[in-house]
Every structure is written in C-alpha cells, then in structure tokens.
Length: 55
Ligand SMILES: [Zn+2]
Image (cartoon, rainbow, N blue to C red; front, side, top):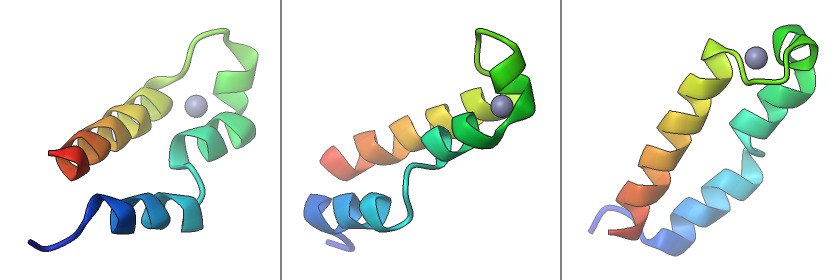
C-alpha cells in the first residue's frame, strides 16, 4: 500500500484546504454566489483524492 488514509488526512490538514483557500481569496467566487470554474475543479479533485484515499 502506498499510503494510508491517516497519512492522506494529515496531508490535507498540513496543506490547508485548497478549495476553502480558493474560496477565501478568489474575487470571482466572492462576487458570485456560486463557485467559479476553478473552485469547482479544486473541489472535484479534492473529492476524488479523498474517495481514492478511503478505498
Ligand atoms: Zn473562484
């Protein structure tokens, strides 16, 4: 096994949440009620990574 779920969780904690970080700093996300394309991409990539880490 390359990595355990615990290691992946630590990785996300250490690097902060890229999606949340983007939402805090993105002007487009702040202007619109809905996440911009970049935010959607970040969230999807994150969800995929977490799903992969769990299985
Ligand atoms: Zn954005």
